[in-house]
Image 1 (cartoon, rainbow, N blue to C red):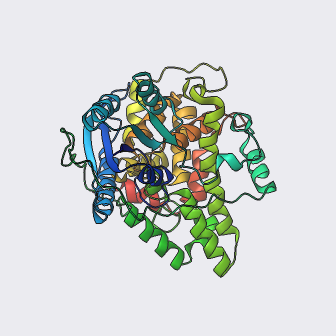
Image 2: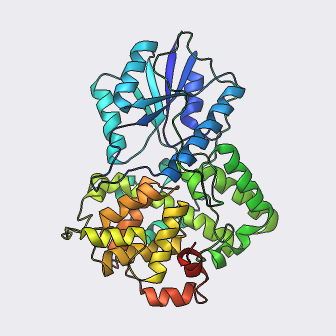
Image 3: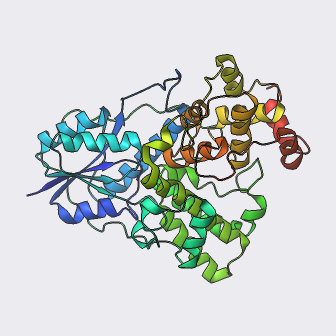
Length: 419
């Protein structure tokens, strides 16, 4: 009787989870696990890698996943420790023949899988976080066009839209008769969210997408996406996508069904366009890998050491520049920031304060509910001019941005007014 361990990573869902579905087909017993990895609680810059808002969102997502597994007689076992050590111990305790998991093409995540294999573990990875199937692309991943526009044109030329999602397993094999020791009941959550966005979990992700489409919000997406305040100006899918509570393919399919029913428009296209950007940031990792994590990025240009007091002023929202300060306080207090504000505050850190882009990226990793390793790295490289963008950097004029996007100072007053 065969046992498989299913290691949930950033795929906290049952619907459209091909790796988990395959594990259910290939085993008599499946042990679903999630590991709170204690490898590095702090960044090299001295602050925590996972802030309270993301911890809260993760906690809700795991609870939702456990409930969905429970409906089918299974469970989610959570462990705390180094992923490699925990998984090797589970293989021994359960006599499992293999570990199945999502493939994550980023250095730290790849390093864990490599170490497991070096220790003799049979680990089967499945790529499942993109909207498009890499096997259907009109080029090899190692030869992906460097410039996003060229990438997009090739995708549109061959009329690729999205890969078809797979259903959730109808039957989940039971847990092994003897469960391993060391599972934790629940990791402590962070602070309660003050921002109406978000509560984690696949159930909430599906409910949010349903109401977003029912209210016809895609129709106005292109016109509203650069706004700074509120729930409806953007899709707010990103937090659930980041932890895999919902898949990009599922969103794309439901968006396509919406277009079939009500007609396509600039807004629906732009939502797909943003999901394509997300894919691009993933696929470019197959071409450049660890180079994307070097200080110089792909350019070879040196990075100046950051000035610590400048970083403290920036991250706490005390630079003296109202729009930047409002954005950084929004990020700190809500765990979220509009796409436009992310670009503005990143540009200010890099070009006005002459900061190290990696330090800014690490702060976003710590604070954002919707932190995604591919998109975070890709966007910071893009602004810093150290990735594939031919323009060589994206400095923003903060005064112009203030006038264009907060002319009545509503956003600034919201976050800078005394409590």
